[in-house]
Image 1 (spheres, rainbow, N blue to C red):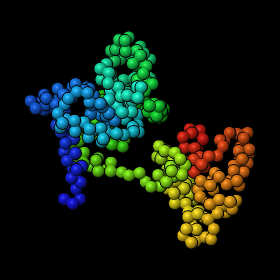
Image 2 (image 1 turned 120 degrees about the vertical axis):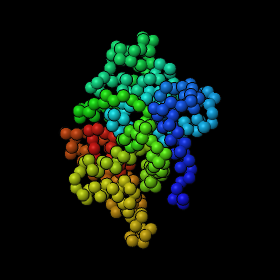
Image 3 (image 1 turned 90 degrees about the vertical axis):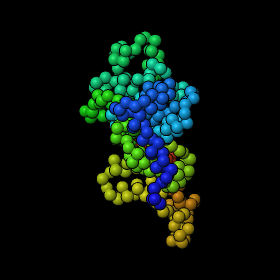
Image 4 (image 1 turned 180 degrees about the vertical axis):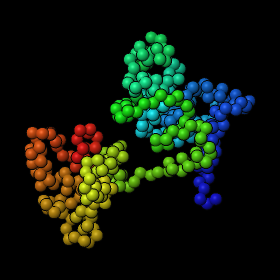
Length: 321
């Protein structure tokens, strides 16, 4: 028993109730929860659920909804994941900073706005496909604008690679890139998902963000950059050390009594840290200007900043350095 997280186990058992509620069997006890849940939204047990309860419902159902909200937070990674995202009660699709709770949108998914080959439909195509009247036009426009740009990019990427998605949306939970339908979500499966979500931000990420004065960096892209731009193993090792804050320079080495001075090896003016060495040192700045001038006829390289010097231009599509 000492290896079991009792709190997570209780949550898992409570969440497994959702599977029983939506299975194919008919029981009288289902009438009451379906009555209360029907007041909220047609689509509720899907990824990224975010809901503001405005009606009174029993505490047990409230707890189940709250725990599903916690476990359902995810970022879709494939075209199929994006297409299965519901429009209503989705914490990632916001209009004026609020989740969509419109009655007319309760049966809509991202898939509802795309045709069979993954192209966004115009208003007439959407209206015909989803049987909406002209009064829904402005809401259609708002929803299209609210779908995250990253999701649209994933659809374009997979569409260009030959991907299609014509599946019928069903209540499910997304685990990384897998979609687990309610029929597969037992108490054991919920427990595994809950345990795997017990993740803490690495101290290296916190330290680098603190030094750069930024937050919410896309670390998955940053970590992959070294593998995308070079096959050289030494360059990849260097990138790993830099992004994991284990590149020991003079300031750190001096604290370990390995070197006599903590000052920069080039300018000898300031402590040698990653921020100083790669973006603040006058010698490095001069070198970067020479690199800019050398490649100016072929590519315009941005000016050096602490973030770009240490993490690279990981957000640029056509510039991966």
